[in-house]
Length: 401
Image (tube, rainbow, N blue to C red; front, side, top):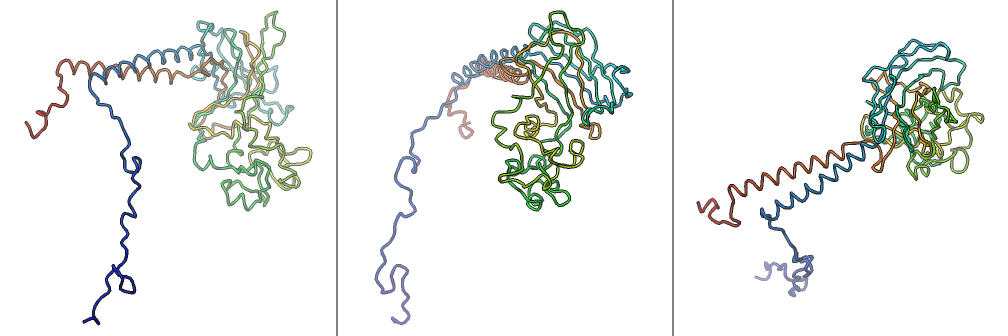
């Protein structure tokens, strides 16, 4: 009954048998693809594990101690001026009313040769409202503090904020890299991108757009002035510079001006962020042009978002001069509000050592790890001596008991 004969899957259209394909999915016969590479797996025995734990503890302990010692050589002074605006305002420098900082608002942590030095007086501050000053210094916090011993160089000046979450995902992404590099970005493009809701205002692109730029730290911290200089001191102002405070290569992310080239045609094409209204009350003009972000290292540091809600950012540095002991007065222009979101702001004056700034965490982490490994090694040794177990003892298998 050839009429009902079915063609076999192994036959072609002419009824000829097909040539079978064999092994077409089989990996090549190599040591790598066939998983025949030589390997070594250590046998974890008490004689190998316990000495290893002791060796790690012996290595980690001195490393931790060295890091703790290096951190102890750093001198650091912290002054919280968040509540300065709550003080009674003075109208001029001759009528300043100073108030001592509460004990929890300042901290001295001196190291090196200044370790045993004690401040001769408590830090204090006063609030000044002076309409004759420029827009950024109409509200001033006058901070006086004592440096108990000569420190530096180098001496670093930081500002520290707390309860400010720069690590929020939407905040971190709220910028336009192309715009910062001088490329023209339309208002609609910015509104559709990561800068929303601060991409445009009044139909014009915001430059620089986004939440990070809008919330830039804008307190002005002036270099401290020595109030009681000794005779051998030629200058009473300890000068901090803003040059060299940003990471190398940060300037490449920005341009000197967004006007011209691939950028905008004129200053009237863009508007400043809403929180920059003090600096640009009439917007960007030829007399008051957009900022030079390529050389503004304070802005560059701010744009590098912090990973924790309490963070410090470098504001100034002095790599050449010692900061002599004495009482200093520092004028801070108050523009950055922290009380509405229950945050704090402080200045930090610190030296550096071969490990950088003051941070004991890494050293104590090594010491803690050394202690843990040592404890495990001792416990394992005691267990092995009291109740040893022969390696590969078949009698201990459940079905042999």
